[in-house]
Image (cartoon, rainbow, N blue to C red; front, side, top):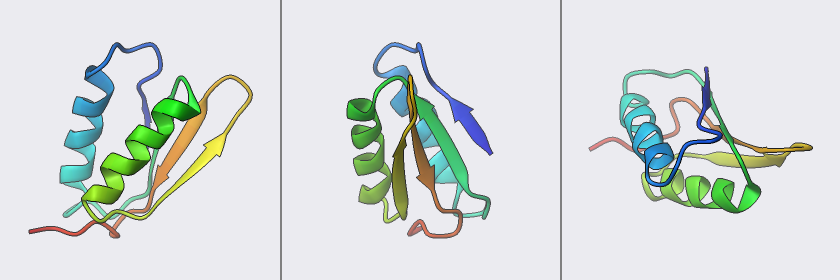
Length: 76
């Protein structure tokens, strides 16, 4: 699944990502989050990792991709 939050103003991207991460307890698909910059990608990565998700950041030419591994998030 891909979530494109490029062009959204803070805090909208994090709100969308929070929804996705919370649904990953029952949804075991990998998610790619497209963000404007890798600086913002690192924030997204940190947020996802706070919930126990495994992540990876990949820099593209004009944007950054944060991959969140499905089924890796800790659910309470």
